[in-house]
Amino acid sequence: MGLFLTTPLTAMLYVVNKLTGLAFAPFAAFDWVRDRLPAGVINSGIERLAGTLTALGISVRQASKPAEIIMVLGVFLAAGVVTGAVFFAAVRRAGPARPGTAGFIPGFVFGLPLALMLVSGSKAPTAPPWLSALWTLTAFLGWGYAFGRVYSGLTRDGAESPDPSGRASATRVGRRKFLIALGASSAVITVAGAGLSRMLSRRSGPASTLPAAAGKTLADDIHAQVGPIVLPNRNDPVPPAPGTRPEYTPLEDHYRIDINLSPPAIDGDNWSLRIGGLVQNPVTLTLRGLVTKYPRMNQFITVSCISNPVAGDLIGTTLWTGVSLQKILEELRVEEGARFLQLESIDGYHETVPLDLIREEERIMFAYAWDGRPLEAKHGFPLRIYIPDRYGMKQPKWITRAEITADDNPGYWVERGWSREARAKSTSVIDTVAVDDIATSPDGKRLVPVGGIAWAGARGISKVEVRVDRGDWVKAELRSPLSPTTWVIWRFDWPFASGAHKFTVRCSDGRGMPQVETAAGAFPDGATGLSRLEKKIPGR
Image (cartoon, rainbow, N blue to C red; front, side):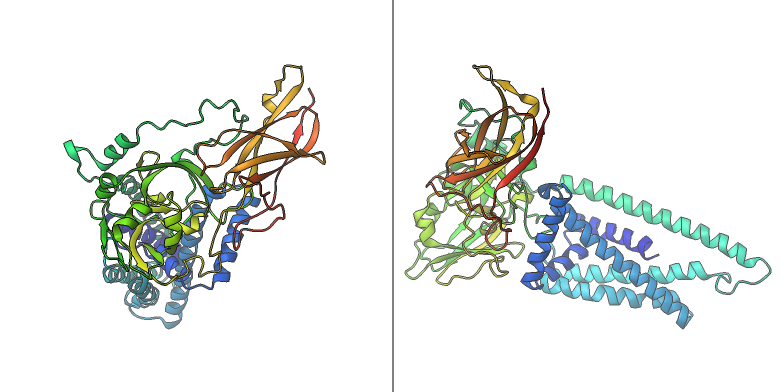
């Protein structure tokens, strides 16, 4: 009964979240608990989840968020089942005359803590926390009352004290029908709620509809400014080995890692960012102003999550469009003693950027578009920051607050033990040993294309070497990168030899510094080690 009643409750809470913006209680409770857990517990959970998915051969990029959601909803449903079992046992023992009224007790016991969590930490952007809390408490009181009514339905007509006249048999049949009807109703409500939620999610995309000249949208303006995306190295003589990941990551395949189970939805029409603090000229930014007022900056950029394991897929490359923070800093006219830019996102995520770094690095930008279109909700709409040579944890998305200060405050993940600098580590990956695409060299040798990527933040790549089994390290060919801030595609044509072989790759950054070969996990400042791939080469 707990499962039959909690499943449709979950669907209903989610539909109301999509329709009204009221907080979705299971996710809000997860946010509240996560923000208060010890850092060691959080970091251990991250490593265990990534390690489990990797061991199962499942893409961390594709499965990490669904896995988190499944775990959270699983705990929520399990709590509902336990609540039902406890309630039924308590009512059976106490034998109240009105079990429906008694059902308010578990509803209140379950709903009140959730309501208090929402009041103290709700991040629903479109509804006041108190309203989310009131709705949640009301929904759970109704859920508890339903437990009482179900108990009455299951125990009426002498089901608790069967008599020898055969009435108990009729009661069992009636109870079976009641169970079937309840289960069917639960399934219908849940499926209908899931379908409606999916439809609402598709319709409620956050892309801005700010009006522009001649009725154009902001997306139209951005697309007109950026134009067709042409890869600058399209005529490079080094082709990627067949099976190498795309050099330019399709937007739907770009990884998403953040602290939210569901990405925040921000109304771009009403969004603005005021930058104040230790400045002589506070500035308020809007999307329209960012697009039209400041010089546009386009950069091909590779960004990686600090929790990406060696050869992991939490890394991607796309075209970023935005405004150099140097331009905005000039307009602010910061006061003496100002040293840092404090940034905060709508989800409570926060980070600090030294002003000296902004002054030194023109490529630091406020980005409002990826791939020639406004940022998608899951990638940080309406605004995110890019800082070269840093992992993604230093680059907040969904920015809603900014202030120039004299003090340096640790960022969200820095507070939880992760690196303060989060400087990108050099890494190289074997994507493919293309045994089905063997080529023949001009001198008649059979060659197996081997390929992958190498990345060292904004430092570039000077060399990639490949070793087969225990042989010598041999230089691979490098394809010209899309920009100084993207990964490099490498290729090595290996002389064919049948049998089982182990391929290993290593790289050096643009300054000639070799990557760290000692294997280490991602915590606290990024994974290190060598990418290896074992492959059986069939005889031909």
